[in-house]
Amino acid sequence: MIPTSAPARARALGGVDVATLDAVAAAARAGLLGRRKHLPPWLLYDERGSELFDEITRLPEYYPTNAEREILAARAAEIAELTKGRTLVELGAGTSEKTLLLLDALSAAGTLERFVPLDVSDDILRLSAEAIAARYPTISVHGIVGDFERDLAALPSGDGRVIAFLGSTIGNLYPARRATLLRAIAAALSPGDSFVLGVDLVKDPAVIERAYNDSRGVTERFVRNALTNANRELGADFAQERYAFDAHWDAESEWMDIGFDALEAHSVRIAELEVEFALAEGQRLRVEVSSKFRRDGIEAELVDAGLRPTGWWTDEASRFALLLATG
Image 1: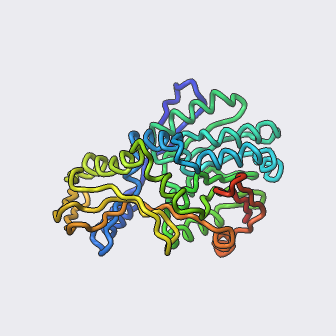
Image 2: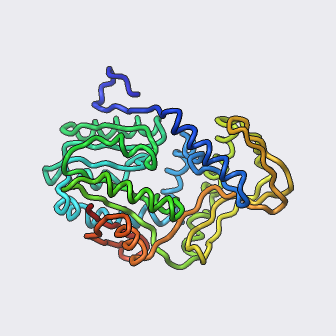
């Protein structure tokens, strides 16, 4: 929590209950003990992971950030006019760099009163919230340390809220979890609230694969950091030299499959989860997926969740899209 003596008008609320921790641990165990092994992707986003991801967004191969920024630069004023948002909520906020375009537009429209960033990284959230509080002295900044899948109930109430979920982070969720999250967002919206969603679109697989196999190896370091984080936080005994990084396009699922292939047969113990599992030579250990979307598909998902799509904008090259929806 940011001390009350801090000069910035921002505060972070943290802490999860035992039931939540148990649910997180149970999901992690299930992923590691099943036939298709996968690490919980939240291991990617410790302080070092957040720094590496921020570096990824600046790489020339990684088009999603620039494409989404292009849309926001062109359409933020229109979104502000349509939503007349008084509170901007950002799920998975990170550094909130692109969000400044929305904040600027809502501020210029004269409606913005409050910004509520929610993120799992306390350190990144603190720095971002304090910087935004200093940049916009007439609004309040209320930072929440939490997980967007479990902590929507922590969002402050009020009318005229715009809930933004940018960066195509929704693509990191498997379809069933996407549906659950979208239903929860629909349930959280009150009359007069809006939902802004950023999604990466299906395109030439070569373009997509280059974004996750950058020439500087930053993405590999980002994904390997999940193993380092698991060793430190969960008492795991992953040895980096046993894993070959691999990120490839899965045409059937229309997602990037990101993780490792075991270079030799071995076992891994994760003390805090009371889990020990074996990997055969060549076996996959997935860390995350990054789904890409088609307009008809993602709009159908919104409708199924109880949301009504009202806006669709893409960058000039149609690589990325922003959707606007209401409850």
